Length: 302
Length: 333
Image 1 (cartoon, rainbow over the protein chains, first blue to last red):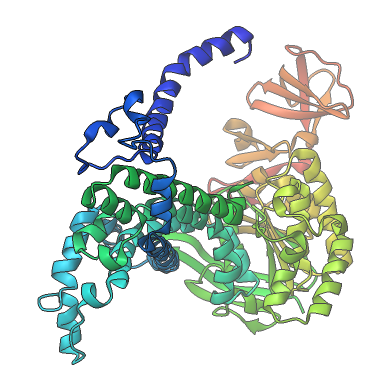
Image 2: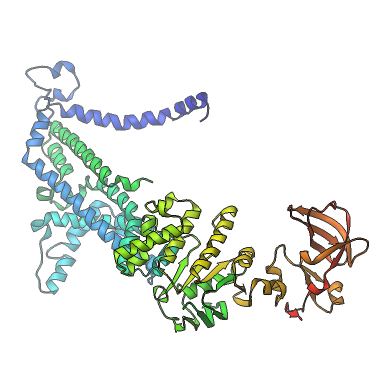
Protein backbone atom coordinates (compact mmCIF):
# COMPACT_ATOMS: atom_id res chain seq x y z
CA UNK A 1 0.00 0.00 0.00
CA UNK A 2 2.39 2.58 -1.17
CA UNK A 3 0.36 5.51 -2.38
CA UNK A 4 -2.41 7.53 -0.78
CA UNK A 5 -4.73 6.35 -3.52
CA UNK A 6 -4.15 2.63 -2.98
CA UNK A 7 -4.50 3.12 0.79
CA UNK A 8 -7.89 4.77 0.33
CA UNK A 9 -8.92 2.05 -2.07
CA UNK A 10 -7.84 -0.56 0.45
CA UNK A 11 -9.93 1.01 3.17
CA UNK A 12 -12.99 1.11 0.93
CA UNK A 13 -12.42 -2.53 0.02
CA UNK A 14 -12.31 -3.76 3.61
CA UNK A 15 -15.06 -1.43 4.84
CA UNK A 16 -18.02 -3.82 4.24
CA UNK A 17 -16.55 -6.61 6.34
CA UNK A 18 -15.36 -4.24 9.05
CA UNK A 19 -18.81 -2.64 9.25
CA UNK A 20 -20.55 -6.02 9.27
CA UNK A 21 -18.30 -7.31 12.06
CA UNK A 22 -18.74 -4.12 14.03
CA UNK A 23 -22.52 -4.31 13.81
CA UNK A 24 -22.38 -8.01 14.64
CA UNK A 25 -20.68 -7.12 17.88
CA UNK A 26 -22.22 -3.80 18.77
CA UNK A 27 -25.92 -4.47 18.13
CA UNK A 28 -26.32 -7.35 20.63
CA UNK A 29 -24.19 -5.49 23.17
CA UNK A 30 -26.18 -2.29 22.79
CA UNK A 31 -29.46 -4.20 23.05
CA UNK A 32 -28.31 -5.98 26.19
CA UNK A 33 -27.28 -2.69 27.77
CA UNK A 34 -30.62 -1.16 26.79
CA UNK A 35 -32.64 -4.08 28.22
CA UNK A 36 -30.58 -3.99 31.39
CA UNK A 37 -31.89 -0.49 32.03
CA UNK A 38 -35.54 -1.47 31.63
CA UNK A 39 -38.08 -2.99 33.97
CA UNK A 40 -38.70 -5.75 31.48
CA UNK A 41 -40.30 -8.96 32.76
CA UNK A 42 -42.08 -11.39 30.48
CA UNK A 43 -44.67 -12.09 33.21
CA UNK A 44 -45.46 -8.40 33.56
CA UNK A 45 -49.14 -7.82 32.71
CA UNK A 46 -48.11 -4.57 31.09
CA UNK A 47 -45.97 -5.55 28.12
CA UNK A 48 -45.36 -2.05 26.83
CA UNK A 49 -42.03 -1.69 28.57
CA UNK A 50 -40.48 -3.98 26.04
CA UNK A 51 -41.54 -1.80 23.18
CA UNK A 52 -39.16 0.97 22.39
CA UNK A 53 -41.67 3.76 22.67
CA UNK A 54 -40.39 6.91 24.43
CA UNK A 55 -43.87 7.82 25.66
CA UNK A 56 -44.22 4.62 27.67
CA UNK A 57 -40.69 4.84 29.00
CA UNK A 58 -41.16 7.98 31.03
CA UNK A 59 -44.72 7.21 32.05
CA UNK A 60 -44.80 7.34 35.86
CA UNK A 61 -47.45 4.64 36.20
CA UNK A 62 -45.53 2.02 34.32
CA UNK A 63 -42.04 2.87 35.66
CA UNK A 64 -40.48 1.21 32.62
CA UNK A 65 -37.10 2.87 32.85
CA UNK A 66 -35.43 1.07 35.74
CA UNK A 67 -32.09 2.89 35.78
CA UNK A 68 -29.53 0.95 37.78
CA UNK A 69 -32.12 -1.03 39.73
CA UNK A 70 -31.48 -4.25 37.77
CA UNK A 71 -27.79 -3.96 38.50
CA UNK A 72 -28.45 -3.25 42.16
CA UNK A 73 -30.60 -6.35 42.58
CA UNK A 74 -28.25 -8.57 40.56
CA UNK A 75 -25.11 -7.51 42.43
CA UNK A 76 -26.72 -7.72 45.86
CA UNK A 77 -28.28 -11.11 45.14
CA UNK A 78 -26.56 -13.68 47.41
CA UNK A 79 -26.65 -16.02 44.39
CA UNK A 80 -24.39 -13.64 42.47
CA UNK A 81 -21.43 -14.03 44.79
CA UNK A 82 -21.87 -17.78 44.83
CA UNK A 83 -22.10 -17.92 41.03
CA UNK A 84 -18.96 -15.82 40.66
CA UNK A 85 -17.06 -18.06 43.07
CA UNK A 86 -18.23 -21.10 41.12
CA UNK A 87 -17.17 -19.52 37.83
CA UNK A 88 -13.68 -18.86 39.13
CA UNK A 89 -13.52 -22.29 40.76
CA UNK A 90 -14.42 -24.04 37.51
CA UNK A 91 -12.01 -21.95 35.43
CA UNK A 92 -9.17 -22.30 37.95
CA UNK A 93 -9.51 -26.04 38.60
CA UNK A 94 -9.97 -26.99 34.97
CA UNK A 95 -6.99 -24.84 33.94
CA UNK A 96 -4.83 -26.46 36.59
CA UNK A 97 -5.89 -29.98 35.63
CA UNK A 98 -5.60 -29.44 31.89
CA UNK A 99 -2.22 -27.66 31.96
CA UNK A 100 -0.53 -30.05 34.41
CA UNK A 101 -2.23 -33.13 32.99
CA UNK A 102 -1.78 -31.90 29.42
CA UNK A 103 1.96 -31.48 29.96
CA UNK A 104 2.26 -35.00 31.39
CA UNK A 105 0.16 -36.53 28.60
CA UNK A 106 2.14 -34.65 25.98
CA UNK A 107 5.43 -35.90 27.43
CA UNK A 108 4.04 -39.43 27.42
CA UNK A 109 2.72 -39.23 23.85
CA UNK A 110 5.99 -37.74 22.61
CA UNK A 111 7.72 -41.04 23.41
CA UNK A 112 8.06 -43.74 20.80
CA UNK A 113 5.37 -46.12 22.04
CA UNK A 114 3.60 -48.87 20.14
CA UNK A 115 0.38 -47.73 18.46
CA UNK A 116 1.23 -44.11 19.13
CA UNK A 117 -1.05 -42.72 16.44
CA UNK A 118 -4.10 -44.60 17.75
CA UNK A 119 -3.34 -43.58 21.32
CA UNK A 120 -3.00 -39.98 20.23
CA UNK A 121 -6.33 -40.08 18.40
CA UNK A 122 -8.03 -41.58 21.45
CA UNK A 123 -6.56 -38.96 23.75
CA UNK A 124 -7.75 -36.14 21.49
CA UNK A 125 -11.25 -37.64 21.04
CA UNK A 126 -13.06 -36.13 24.09
CA UNK A 127 -12.49 -32.67 22.66
CA UNK A 128 -14.81 -33.52 19.77
CA UNK A 129 -17.67 -34.70 22.00
CA UNK A 130 -20.48 -32.16 22.38
CA UNK A 131 -20.71 -30.73 25.92
CA UNK A 132 -24.30 -31.96 26.32
CA UNK A 133 -23.36 -35.47 25.23
CA UNK A 134 -20.29 -35.48 27.44
CA UNK A 135 -22.41 -34.44 30.41
CA UNK A 136 -24.99 -37.15 29.72
CA UNK A 137 -22.36 -39.84 29.30
CA UNK A 138 -20.66 -38.89 32.54
CA UNK A 139 -23.92 -38.50 34.43
CA UNK A 140 -25.53 -41.74 33.37
CA UNK A 141 -22.76 -44.11 32.42
CA UNK A 142 -19.83 -43.14 34.58
CA UNK A 143 -20.85 -41.23 37.70
CA UNK A 144 -24.26 -42.76 38.37
CA UNK A 145 -24.17 -44.26 41.88
CA UNK A 146 -26.13 -47.37 40.82
CA UNK A 147 -25.31 -48.17 37.20
CA UNK A 148 -22.20 -46.00 36.75
CA UNK A 149 -18.82 -47.46 35.83
CA UNK A 150 -16.98 -45.52 38.53
CA UNK A 151 -19.29 -46.74 41.25
CA UNK A 152 -18.89 -50.28 39.93
CA UNK A 153 -15.14 -49.95 40.38
CA UNK A 154 -15.36 -48.40 43.83
CA UNK A 155 -17.93 -50.98 44.92
CA UNK A 156 -15.76 -53.80 43.56
CA UNK A 157 -12.93 -52.45 45.70
CA UNK A 158 -15.27 -52.43 48.67
CA UNK A 159 -15.37 -48.66 49.01
CA UNK A 160 -19.06 -48.16 48.27
CA UNK A 161 -20.55 -45.81 45.72
CA UNK A 162 -20.53 -42.03 45.55
CA UNK A 163 -23.54 -40.01 44.43
CA UNK A 164 -21.40 -37.36 42.73
CA UNK A 165 -24.09 -34.96 41.61
CA UNK A 166 -25.77 -34.85 45.00
CA UNK A 167 -22.79 -34.64 47.29
CA UNK A 168 -19.94 -33.27 45.14
CA UNK A 169 -21.65 -31.35 42.32
CA UNK A 170 -18.82 -28.87 41.80
CA UNK A 171 -16.18 -31.60 41.69
CA UNK A 172 -18.33 -33.55 39.25
CA UNK A 173 -18.72 -30.57 36.92
CA UNK A 174 -15.00 -29.81 37.12
CA UNK A 175 -14.19 -33.45 36.25
CA UNK A 176 -16.50 -33.44 33.21
CA UNK A 177 -15.24 -30.10 31.90
CA UNK A 178 -11.61 -31.03 32.55
CA UNK A 179 -12.14 -34.29 30.66
CA UNK A 180 -13.20 -32.23 27.67
CA UNK A 181 -10.41 -29.65 27.83
CA UNK A 182 -7.49 -31.86 28.78
CA UNK A 183 -7.17 -33.10 25.16
CA UNK A 184 -6.99 -29.55 23.88
CA UNK A 185 -4.07 -28.74 26.17
CA UNK A 186 -2.43 -32.07 25.32
CA UNK A 187 -2.73 -31.43 21.61
CA UNK A 188 -1.18 -27.96 21.75
CA UNK A 189 1.59 -28.95 24.17
CA UNK A 190 2.40 -32.11 22.20
CA UNK A 191 2.83 -30.08 19.03
CA UNK A 192 5.12 -27.72 20.91
CA UNK A 193 7.15 -30.62 22.32
CA UNK A 194 7.67 -32.05 18.86
CA UNK A 195 9.26 -28.81 17.74
CA UNK A 196 11.92 -29.10 20.44
CA UNK A 197 15.32 -28.84 18.79
CA UNK A 198 17.06 -32.21 18.56
CA UNK A 199 20.57 -30.73 18.78
CA UNK A 200 19.57 -28.86 21.94
CA UNK A 201 18.49 -32.16 23.44
CA UNK A 202 21.88 -33.60 22.52
CA UNK A 203 23.69 -30.57 23.91
CA UNK A 204 21.85 -31.13 27.18
CA UNK A 205 22.89 -34.78 27.02
CA UNK A 206 26.53 -33.75 26.58
CA UNK A 207 26.09 -31.44 29.57
CA UNK A 208 24.93 -34.47 31.59
CA UNK A 209 21.46 -33.11 32.38
CA UNK A 210 19.38 -35.53 34.49
CA UNK A 211 15.74 -36.02 33.32
CA UNK A 212 14.09 -33.83 35.96
CA UNK A 213 16.53 -30.97 35.40
CA UNK A 214 16.04 -31.40 31.68
CA UNK A 215 12.30 -30.99 32.16
CA UNK A 216 12.72 -28.01 34.46
CA UNK A 217 15.43 -26.09 32.57
CA UNK A 218 14.71 -27.05 28.95
CA UNK A 219 11.18 -28.40 28.40
CA UNK A 220 9.24 -26.08 30.68
CA UNK A 221 10.73 -22.82 29.30
CA UNK A 222 10.12 -24.20 25.83
CA UNK A 223 6.46 -24.81 26.75
CA UNK A 224 5.92 -21.39 28.37
CA UNK A 225 4.40 -19.86 25.28
CA UNK A 226 2.03 -22.72 24.33
CA UNK A 227 0.93 -22.95 27.96
CA UNK A 228 0.07 -19.25 27.80
CA UNK A 229 -1.99 -19.87 24.69
CA UNK A 230 -3.80 -22.77 26.36
CA UNK A 231 -4.56 -20.69 29.46
CA UNK A 232 -5.88 -17.73 27.46
CA UNK A 233 -8.07 -19.75 25.11
CA UNK A 234 -9.40 -22.09 27.79
CA UNK A 235 -10.24 -19.20 30.10
CA UNK A 236 -12.46 -17.65 27.43
CA UNK A 237 -14.37 -20.89 26.95
CA UNK A 238 -14.43 -21.98 30.59
CA UNK A 239 -16.07 -18.75 31.72
CA UNK A 240 -18.98 -19.78 29.48
CA UNK A 241 -19.48 -23.34 30.71
CA UNK A 242 -23.23 -23.99 30.77
CA UNK A 243 -24.31 -27.28 29.20
CA UNK A 244 -22.48 -29.47 31.71
CA UNK A 245 -24.20 -27.70 34.61
CA UNK A 246 -27.62 -27.52 32.99
CA UNK A 247 -27.71 -31.14 31.82
CA UNK A 248 -26.48 -32.66 35.06
CA UNK A 249 -28.88 -30.51 37.04
CA UNK A 250 -26.19 -29.23 39.34
CA UNK A 251 -27.02 -25.56 38.78
CA UNK A 252 -28.26 -25.13 42.32
CA UNK A 253 -24.85 -25.64 43.90
CA UNK A 254 -22.40 -25.57 41.00
CA UNK A 255 -24.12 -22.83 38.98
CA UNK A 256 -21.78 -20.20 37.56
CA UNK A 257 -22.48 -16.74 36.14
CA UNK A 258 -23.94 -17.91 32.80
CA UNK A 259 -26.21 -20.25 34.73
CA UNK A 260 -27.35 -17.42 36.99
CA UNK A 261 -28.13 -15.31 33.92
CA UNK A 262 -30.14 -18.25 32.60
CA UNK A 263 -32.01 -18.43 35.90
CA UNK A 264 -32.82 -14.73 35.74
CA UNK A 265 -33.84 -14.76 32.12
CA UNK A 266 -35.52 -18.07 31.42
CA UNK A 267 -36.61 -19.26 34.86
CA UNK A 268 -37.67 -15.92 36.33
CA UNK A 269 -38.54 -14.37 32.94
CA UNK A 270 -36.72 -11.24 34.09
CA UNK A 271 -35.16 -9.97 30.85
CA UNK A 272 -33.95 -6.75 32.47
CA UNK A 273 -32.23 -8.55 35.33
CA UNK A 274 -30.70 -11.16 33.02
CA UNK A 275 -29.34 -8.42 30.77
CA UNK A 276 -27.81 -6.66 33.74
CA UNK A 277 -26.26 -9.99 34.74
CA UNK A 278 -24.92 -10.46 31.23
CA UNK A 279 -23.25 -7.05 31.28
CA UNK A 280 -21.77 -7.79 34.72
CA UNK A 281 -20.40 -11.06 33.33
CA UNK A 282 -18.87 -9.24 30.36
CA UNK A 283 -17.19 -6.73 32.66
CA UNK A 284 -15.86 -9.48 34.93
CA UNK A 285 -14.54 -11.43 31.94
CA UNK A 286 -12.71 -8.34 30.76
CA UNK A 287 -11.19 -7.82 34.20
CA UNK A 288 -10.00 -11.44 34.20
CA UNK A 289 -8.63 -11.03 30.66
CA UNK A 290 -6.83 -7.84 31.65
CA UNK A 291 -5.04 -9.48 34.57
CA UNK A 292 -4.28 -12.61 32.57
CA UNK A 293 -2.65 -10.57 29.84
CA UNK A 294 -0.66 -8.62 32.40
CA UNK A 295 0.50 -11.76 34.16
CA UNK A 296 1.34 -14.05 31.30
CA UNK A 297 0.93 -11.97 28.15
CA UNK A 298 4.64 -11.15 28.13
CA UNK A 299 5.29 -14.77 27.23
CA UNK A 300 3.71 -14.08 23.87
CA UNK A 301 6.11 -11.30 22.98
CA UNK A 302 9.35 -11.65 21.05
CA UNK B 1 45.13 -37.60 28.73
CA UNK B 2 43.13 -36.98 25.59
CA UNK B 3 43.85 -40.03 23.47
CA UNK B 4 40.95 -41.55 21.57
CA UNK B 5 41.08 -44.89 19.88
CA UNK B 6 38.48 -46.56 17.68
CA UNK B 7 38.63 -50.32 17.17
CA UNK B 8 36.59 -51.80 14.35
CA UNK B 9 33.72 -49.40 15.03
CA UNK B 10 30.62 -50.33 13.05
CA UNK B 11 27.29 -48.61 12.57
CA UNK B 12 24.34 -50.25 10.86
CA UNK B 13 20.77 -48.91 10.56
CA UNK B 14 18.61 -51.88 9.59
CA UNK B 15 20.12 -53.16 6.34
CA UNK B 16 21.90 -49.91 5.75
CA UNK B 17 25.59 -49.98 6.61
CA UNK B 18 26.74 -46.48 7.54
CA UNK B 19 30.21 -47.30 8.89
CA UNK B 20 31.44 -50.76 7.87
CA UNK B 21 34.30 -50.76 10.37
CA UNK B 22 36.62 -47.93 11.33
CA UNK B 23 39.97 -48.07 13.11
CA UNK B 24 41.66 -44.88 14.22
CA UNK B 25 44.09 -43.73 16.90
CA UNK B 26 44.12 -40.09 17.89
CA UNK B 27 47.02 -38.85 19.93
CA UNK B 28 46.78 -36.43 22.82
CA UNK B 29 46.68 -32.81 21.71
CA UNK B 30 46.17 -33.65 18.08
CA UNK B 31 43.89 -31.67 15.78
CA UNK B 32 42.16 -34.28 13.63
CA UNK B 33 39.78 -33.36 10.85
CA UNK B 34 37.20 -35.76 9.46
CA UNK B 35 36.50 -34.73 5.91
CA UNK B 36 34.39 -36.16 3.14
CA UNK B 37 31.37 -35.37 0.99
CA UNK B 38 27.96 -35.17 2.66
CA UNK B 39 26.58 -38.55 3.60
CA UNK B 40 30.02 -40.12 4.00
CA UNK B 41 29.43 -40.92 7.68
CA UNK B 42 31.82 -38.38 9.16
CA UNK B 43 29.19 -36.84 11.42
CA UNK B 44 27.94 -40.28 12.44
CA UNK B 45 31.46 -41.28 13.40
CA UNK B 46 31.83 -38.10 15.48
CA UNK B 47 28.47 -38.66 17.16
CA UNK B 48 29.48 -42.21 17.99
CA UNK B 49 32.61 -40.90 19.67
CA UNK B 50 30.44 -38.38 21.55
CA UNK B 51 28.05 -41.12 22.64
CA UNK B 52 25.04 -39.63 20.86
CA UNK B 53 24.83 -42.71 18.61
CA UNK B 54 25.17 -46.31 19.79
CA UNK B 55 27.86 -48.56 18.34
CA UNK B 56 26.59 -51.57 16.43
CA UNK B 57 29.87 -53.27 17.28
CA UNK B 58 33.46 -52.38 18.03
CA UNK B 59 34.94 -50.32 20.83
CA UNK B 60 35.88 -46.75 21.58
CA UNK B 61 38.48 -45.94 24.23
CA UNK B 62 39.14 -42.48 25.56
CA UNK B 63 42.32 -42.00 27.53
CA UNK B 64 42.78 -45.78 27.48
CA UNK B 65 39.40 -46.41 29.12
CA UNK B 66 36.68 -48.24 27.21
CA UNK B 67 33.67 -45.92 26.92
CA UNK B 68 31.68 -47.84 24.30
CA UNK B 69 28.66 -48.07 26.62
CA UNK B 70 29.19 -44.88 28.61
CA UNK B 71 26.68 -42.01 28.56
CA UNK B 72 27.80 -38.89 26.64
CA UNK B 73 28.37 -36.90 29.80
CA UNK B 74 30.62 -39.62 31.27
CA UNK B 75 33.07 -39.51 28.40
CA UNK B 76 34.64 -36.20 29.34
CA UNK B 77 34.08 -34.75 25.89
CA UNK B 78 32.56 -31.45 24.81
CA UNK B 79 30.82 -30.88 21.54
CA UNK B 80 30.15 -27.80 19.43
CA UNK B 81 27.10 -28.33 17.23
CA UNK B 82 26.46 -27.08 13.74
CA UNK B 83 23.36 -25.14 14.83
CA UNK B 84 25.25 -24.14 18.03
CA UNK B 85 22.30 -25.65 20.02
CA UNK B 86 22.36 -22.83 22.56
CA UNK B 87 19.60 -22.87 25.16
CA UNK B 88 17.40 -20.04 23.83
CA UNK B 89 15.78 -18.97 27.10
CA UNK B 90 19.03 -18.78 29.08
CA UNK B 91 21.47 -15.88 29.18
CA UNK B 92 24.93 -16.38 27.71
CA UNK B 93 26.25 -16.73 31.26
CA UNK B 94 23.81 -19.54 32.09
CA UNK B 95 24.42 -21.23 28.76
CA UNK B 96 28.12 -21.45 29.52
CA UNK B 97 27.55 -22.37 33.17
CA UNK B 98 24.85 -24.99 32.63
CA UNK B 99 27.13 -28.01 32.23
CA UNK B 100 29.07 -27.10 35.37
CA UNK B 101 25.85 -26.54 37.27
CA UNK B 102 24.61 -29.99 36.28
CA UNK B 103 27.96 -31.42 37.37
CA UNK B 104 27.39 -29.90 40.81
CA UNK B 105 30.35 -27.52 40.72
CA UNK B 106 30.20 -24.88 43.54
CA UNK B 107 28.80 -21.53 42.46
CA UNK B 108 31.94 -19.47 43.13
CA UNK B 109 33.99 -21.82 40.99
CA UNK B 110 31.41 -21.70 38.19
CA UNK B 111 31.48 -17.89 38.24
CA UNK B 112 35.25 -17.71 37.97
CA UNK B 113 35.38 -20.31 35.19
CA UNK B 114 32.63 -18.57 33.21
CA UNK B 115 34.37 -15.22 33.62
CA UNK B 116 37.64 -16.74 32.42
CA UNK B 117 36.05 -18.39 29.40
CA UNK B 118 34.15 -15.22 28.54
CA UNK B 119 37.37 -13.22 28.66
CA UNK B 120 39.10 -15.71 26.34
CA UNK B 121 36.22 -15.53 23.89
CA UNK B 122 35.57 -11.77 24.08
CA UNK B 123 32.10 -12.41 25.44
CA UNK B 124 32.36 -10.52 28.72
CA UNK B 125 30.07 -7.71 27.52
CA UNK B 126 27.43 -10.13 26.32
CA UNK B 127 27.10 -12.38 29.36
CA UNK B 128 23.62 -11.18 30.26
CA UNK B 129 22.18 -11.29 26.76
CA UNK B 130 20.01 -14.01 25.32
CA UNK B 131 21.32 -16.05 22.36
CA UNK B 132 18.79 -14.48 19.98
CA UNK B 133 20.34 -11.07 20.65
CA UNK B 134 23.73 -12.24 19.38
CA UNK B 135 25.23 -12.42 15.91
CA UNK B 136 26.19 -15.73 14.30
CA UNK B 137 29.85 -15.41 15.24
CA UNK B 138 29.00 -14.52 18.82
CA UNK B 139 26.68 -17.51 19.13
CA UNK B 140 29.46 -19.68 17.80
CA UNK B 141 31.78 -18.35 20.47
CA UNK B 142 29.19 -19.03 23.18
CA UNK B 143 28.95 -22.62 21.93
CA UNK B 144 32.73 -22.89 22.17
CA UNK B 145 32.64 -21.27 25.61
CA UNK B 146 30.15 -23.87 26.77
CA UNK B 147 32.65 -26.50 25.65
CA UNK B 148 35.82 -25.05 27.16
CA UNK B 149 34.52 -24.42 30.69
CA UNK B 150 34.10 -28.13 31.15
CA UNK B 151 37.81 -28.72 30.51
CA UNK B 152 37.08 -31.83 28.47
CA UNK B 153 39.48 -34.59 27.42
CA UNK B 154 38.74 -33.66 23.85
CA UNK B 155 36.66 -31.21 21.83
CA UNK B 156 34.34 -32.37 19.09
CA UNK B 157 33.29 -29.92 16.39
CA UNK B 158 30.45 -30.85 14.04
CA UNK B 159 30.71 -28.56 11.00
CA UNK B 160 30.82 -25.54 13.30
CA UNK B 161 31.49 -22.92 10.64
CA UNK B 162 29.00 -23.91 7.98
CA UNK B 163 26.35 -21.43 9.18
CA UNK B 164 28.68 -18.44 9.05
CA UNK B 165 29.37 -16.12 6.15
CA UNK B 166 32.65 -16.45 4.27
CA UNK B 167 34.59 -13.64 5.97
CA UNK B 168 33.57 -14.72 9.46
CA UNK B 169 34.40 -18.31 8.63
CA UNK B 170 38.03 -17.42 7.94
CA UNK B 171 38.22 -15.51 11.23
CA UNK B 172 36.68 -18.33 13.23
CA UNK B 173 38.98 -20.83 11.56
CA UNK B 174 42.02 -18.93 12.78
CA UNK B 175 40.34 -18.48 16.15
CA UNK B 176 39.79 -22.21 16.60
CA UNK B 177 43.38 -22.96 15.54
CA UNK B 178 44.63 -20.43 18.09
CA UNK B 179 42.40 -22.01 20.71
CA UNK B 180 43.88 -25.40 19.93
CA UNK B 181 47.35 -24.00 20.38
CA UNK B 182 46.47 -22.28 23.67
CA UNK B 183 44.63 -25.23 25.22
CA UNK B 184 46.76 -27.92 23.56
CA UNK B 185 43.71 -30.17 23.84
CA UNK B 186 42.70 -32.98 21.52
CA UNK B 187 40.23 -31.75 18.93
CA UNK B 188 38.19 -33.63 16.36
CA UNK B 189 36.68 -31.46 13.69
CA UNK B 190 34.15 -32.54 11.10
CA UNK B 191 33.82 -30.64 7.85
CA UNK B 192 33.00 -31.15 4.20
CA UNK B 193 35.25 -28.24 3.25
CA UNK B 194 38.67 -29.49 2.22
CA UNK B 195 40.16 -25.99 2.64
CA UNK B 196 39.23 -26.06 6.32
CA UNK B 197 40.70 -29.55 6.56
CA UNK B 198 43.98 -28.60 4.88
CA UNK B 199 44.52 -25.40 6.86
CA UNK B 200 43.54 -26.59 10.32
CA UNK B 201 44.44 -30.23 10.65
CA UNK B 202 47.45 -31.95 12.14
CA UNK B 203 46.00 -35.05 10.56
CA UNK B 204 43.17 -35.45 8.11
CA UNK B 205 40.89 -38.48 8.00
CA UNK B 206 39.25 -38.74 4.58
CA UNK B 207 35.99 -40.66 4.62
CA UNK B 208 34.10 -42.02 1.65
CA UNK B 209 30.86 -43.98 2.08
CA UNK B 210 31.70 -44.71 5.71
CA UNK B 211 35.14 -46.07 4.92
CA UNK B 212 38.31 -44.33 6.06
CA UNK B 213 40.11 -43.85 2.74
CA UNK B 214 43.30 -42.36 4.05
CA UNK B 215 44.72 -40.81 7.20
CA UNK B 216 47.64 -38.45 7.10
CA UNK B 217 48.96 -34.94 7.41
CA UNK B 218 47.59 -32.42 4.92
CA UNK B 219 50.76 -32.51 2.82
CA UNK B 220 50.92 -36.29 2.85
CA UNK B 221 47.42 -36.41 1.43
CA UNK B 222 48.24 -33.69 -1.05
CA UNK B 223 51.45 -35.26 -2.26
CA UNK B 224 50.70 -38.96 -1.94
CA UNK B 225 47.00 -39.68 -2.18
CA UNK B 226 46.25 -43.39 -1.80
CA UNK B 227 43.26 -43.34 -4.07
CA UNK B 228 41.49 -41.53 -6.83
CA UNK B 229 38.90 -40.35 -4.31
CA UNK B 230 41.43 -38.72 -2.00
CA UNK B 231 43.32 -37.25 -4.94
CA UNK B 232 40.14 -35.67 -6.23
CA UNK B 233 38.89 -34.48 -2.86
CA UNK B 234 42.02 -32.82 -1.52
CA UNK B 235 43.33 -29.75 -3.32
CA UNK B 236 41.61 -26.79 -4.91
CA UNK B 237 40.98 -26.53 -7.76
CA UNK B 238 40.55 -30.27 -8.18
CA UNK B 239 43.23 -32.51 -9.61
CA UNK B 240 42.85 -33.12 -13.35
CA UNK B 241 42.09 -36.73 -14.26
CA UNK B 242 42.86 -38.09 -17.70
CA UNK B 243 41.82 -41.52 -18.90
CA UNK B 244 42.21 -43.35 -22.21
CA UNK B 245 45.27 -43.41 -24.43
CA UNK B 246 47.12 -40.63 -22.60
CA UNK B 247 46.79 -42.65 -19.38
CA UNK B 248 47.73 -45.85 -21.14
CA UNK B 249 51.02 -44.24 -22.18
CA UNK B 250 51.82 -44.03 -18.47
CA UNK B 251 50.67 -47.65 -17.93
CA UNK B 252 47.68 -46.55 -15.83
CA UNK B 253 43.91 -46.52 -16.08
CA UNK B 254 43.74 -42.94 -14.93
CA UNK B 255 46.42 -40.34 -14.48
CA UNK B 256 46.05 -37.33 -12.25
CA UNK B 257 47.90 -34.04 -12.30
CA UNK B 258 47.20 -30.99 -10.20
CA UNK B 259 46.60 -27.61 -11.92
CA UNK B 260 49.67 -26.19 -10.21
CA UNK B 261 51.90 -28.95 -11.60
CA UNK B 262 51.31 -28.21 -15.23
CA UNK B 263 53.69 -25.76 -16.90
CA UNK B 264 52.78 -23.51 -19.78
CA UNK B 265 55.52 -23.76 -22.43
CA UNK B 266 56.45 -21.97 -25.62
CA UNK B 267 56.13 -23.90 -28.86
CA UNK B 268 54.99 -27.47 -28.68
CA UNK B 269 54.17 -29.14 -25.33
CA UNK B 270 53.07 -32.56 -24.18
CA UNK B 271 49.49 -31.44 -24.61
CA UNK B 272 48.38 -28.67 -26.93
CA UNK B 273 45.03 -27.00 -26.89
CA UNK B 274 42.92 -23.89 -26.65
CA UNK B 275 42.02 -21.78 -23.63
CA UNK B 276 38.29 -22.19 -23.12
CA UNK B 277 37.88 -20.10 -19.99
CA UNK B 278 40.13 -18.07 -17.72
CA UNK B 279 39.52 -17.31 -14.02
CA UNK B 280 41.65 -14.40 -12.81
CA UNK B 281 42.16 -14.35 -9.05
CA UNK B 282 44.88 -11.70 -9.01
CA UNK B 283 47.68 -13.72 -7.48
CA UNK B 284 47.18 -16.39 -10.09
CA UNK B 285 44.86 -17.40 -12.91
CA UNK B 286 43.13 -20.69 -13.55
CA UNK B 287 42.87 -21.57 -17.19
CA UNK B 288 40.39 -24.15 -18.42
CA UNK B 289 42.09 -25.66 -21.42
CA UNK B 290 40.59 -27.99 -24.01
CA UNK B 291 43.67 -30.10 -24.70
CA UNK B 292 43.94 -32.52 -27.60
CA UNK B 293 43.83 -36.08 -26.34
CA UNK B 294 43.53 -35.13 -22.67
CA UNK B 295 40.19 -33.34 -22.65
CA UNK B 296 39.38 -30.38 -20.41
CA UNK B 297 42.29 -29.51 -18.07
CA UNK B 298 42.56 -26.82 -15.43
CA UNK B 299 45.94 -25.16 -15.31
CA UNK B 300 47.26 -22.70 -12.78
CA UNK B 301 49.14 -19.82 -14.38
CA UNK B 302 51.09 -17.76 -11.86
CA UNK B 303 50.54 -14.03 -11.77
CA UNK B 304 48.52 -12.15 -14.31
CA UNK B 305 48.46 -14.42 -17.29
CA UNK B 306 48.04 -12.52 -20.53
CA UNK B 307 46.66 -15.32 -22.68
CA UNK B 308 43.26 -14.72 -24.23
CA UNK B 309 40.27 -17.03 -24.18
CA UNK B 310 40.31 -18.97 -27.43
CA UNK B 311 44.06 -18.61 -27.74
CA UNK B 312 46.36 -21.58 -28.37
CA UNK B 313 48.40 -22.93 -25.48
CA UNK B 314 51.00 -25.64 -24.97
CA UNK B 315 51.19 -27.57 -21.71
CA UNK B 316 53.84 -29.73 -20.11
CA UNK B 317 53.05 -31.66 -16.91
CA UNK B 318 55.66 -32.08 -14.20
CA UNK B 319 56.12 -35.84 -14.61
CA UNK B 320 57.46 -36.27 -11.05
CA UNK B 321 54.12 -34.96 -9.77
CA UNK B 322 52.01 -37.24 -11.91
CA UNK B 323 49.72 -39.63 -10.04
CA UNK B 324 48.81 -42.97 -11.59
CA UNK B 325 45.71 -44.96 -10.63
CA UNK B 326 44.50 -48.43 -11.53
CA UNK B 327 40.98 -49.25 -12.68
CA UNK B 328 39.85 -49.76 -9.07
CA UNK B 329 40.84 -46.20 -8.18
CA UNK B 330 43.89 -47.30 -6.18
CA UNK B 331 47.22 -45.60 -6.62
CA UNK B 332 50.09 -47.24 -8.61
CA UNK B 333 53.40 -46.39 -7.01
